[in-house]
Amino acid sequence: MIPPGSTIGIVGGGQLGRMLSIAAAQLGYRCHIFDPHPNPCAADVAAKFTRAEFDDIQALQGFAAEADIVTYEFENLPVEPLRLLGDKLKPGVRSLAIAQERAEEKTFIESTGARVAPWRPIDGLDDVRSAVSELGLPLVLKTRCYGYDGKGQAWVRSADELDAAWDAIGRAPAIAEAAVAFITEYSVILCRWADGRHVFWDSPENEHRDGILHRSTVPGGEAVAAQVEEARAAALRIAEALDHVGVLTVEFFASADGPLVNEIAPRVHNSGHWTIEGAVTSQFEQHIRAICDLHPGLTGLTRGGATMENLIGSDIDRWPELVGERGVHVHLYGKDDARPGRKMGHVTRVIR
Ligand code: AMP
Image (cartoon, rainbow, N blue to C red):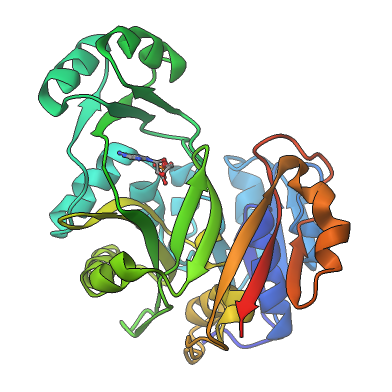
């Protein structure tokens, strides 16, 4: 057990690190953020900040030596330097390595018995052509690495878009995935302890705009209710196969013939932000509890449910109106540059 008063190292200094640090501080821990940017938003609320590149082994080892436990809040991290942290890193490098490479991720998910949309590995234009004839159209190309929030993705809707799509993803190693005619999207957010104990939160139904999460709603609709049991079983098999410790999020498509895994995130997730006010224990606090081996907190709803809406780019300009709305919980991440597509904050409305 890592007791309160200890230092938790967090690799990555974005909003997830910020909300983890706030939750950790409430439990009496000190957080130390490791990030290459000059003023990452997590550093504003943490006890210490080290600015260094993620592959700066010396800096990473110094940071880890000062910490009692290290976690990460971002999956596009070089794996090899983190491997040197051994058991001090929770979740372990395996969760990270699998989640950051889409072909490995899909293969791994299928190996646990969960289903994904039909897909093919892509290493060149010929592979794209074969994928079109085998999977049909439309399909989506997704780069194997460094994709998030719809980045590194290009749709092919007709045969004449094939070259442009391959160019659009920078001719990088990719996968091609058949379009899923989904009823809706949802996620299973779970937290697992090293001894196998685990908890789930209610599954949010997720609405995306331009490939970015727009809104999460709990409870989800009928399709979510009908599929969540099977989806939870699949997510738990994934967590167990990874020997994952901490929060794991599995995003699903609700298809007409059941849950299809879209992707996994070995960390707290945007679709779980509603848990801060909408659940007895938030995903952030629970992650800290699990990596420090404290007792699991309750995950039930505090009220009838919740909706979480992201503030993306210039949405942040609505903050005066939002803070004036009765009962809304406004979270602003303290980022200065409201670029289009950048997650600047979120609001949660708890359903009474
Ligand atoms: P991803 O980055 O893979 O999570 O994709 C972002 C969003 O794009 C998803 O949440 C879906 O809304 C949409 N999307 C991704 N892949 C597919 C697919 N194979 N079929 C239909 N929609 C997709």
